[in-house]
Image (cartoon, rainbow, N blue to C red; front, side, top):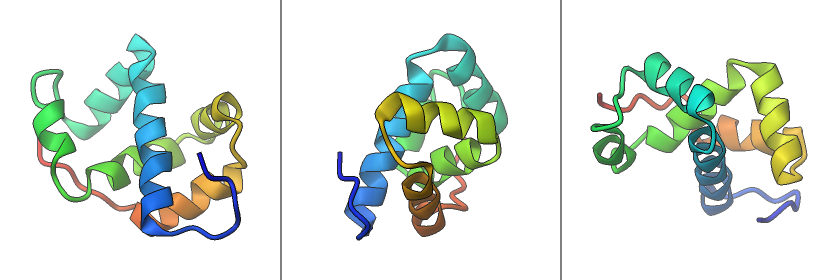
Length: 96
């Protein structure tokens, strides 16, 4: 994953996809995301194709600083990069 200072939409999307994988790797984390978004296991794949979904993933992480820091540490990312990705993609509203 890119960690350079230049952040474009493709890199921001890489960060968001990694965040989704991080959430999905733990049942409790994934359950919290599903509950917060109103999605269910049966609808997440469809919602993932919707514009704004990746932004919603980063919205969820940004709302919980400890979770965001855990994700950044887990992936070896600077939390500021995650914050910049969120600023670029954030405020997503996936359809449930």
